[in-house]
Image (tube, rainbow, N blue to C red; front, side, top):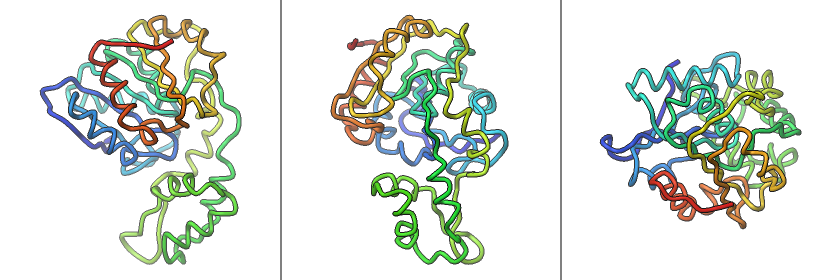
Length: 263
């Protein structure tokens, strides 16, 4: 699969692949990607069924792993640093454990190797309920989503997936909602099996105010990542790369350049 990607930085520097979260895209990482591009050759990918990449079934971690490995092979990237956020973090874990020779250092952003109960059903339903052919504006879409998704910031995030049709009236969703709905249980679950393990240096960057951050789970991370460090950005929610970009970039760059601090 020919994944779309955005590049930042000098091609002579170490590669850093960035994998976004569910309903996100490389677009969400342009700011942090550009900043990290001062230190690395950054590739922010659009995973299958997201952004400008092709739509395809199934939306599984196995399929996404194969997509990323194929993408690396096509660009002759034998190995590089790997950073993943949320769903992209689970994918990054899987790639690191199953293909450790591809990953120099691993950064996992506000995600742990566990099942997170509670699906995106209400958001999918709200997105599916909009008559896209008759939709007149993004403002109208925002108003239609408001009842099901009262959080303004979350609605704006969802609306990054709304695009005006190239042909014909109205808009379209750039995400493949049907594929995501069909595979939601796998997306929510842990991508790792009992024997999975990555011996390389690993940094978890967790948001202190995020529902994904469970300090009681941190000791158990050694089972999969014996050389792990956990850093908690106490005031951040689920998106530290956006909420506290400068601090986030500083932590990641320091870790990938060889330093580490944390729990």
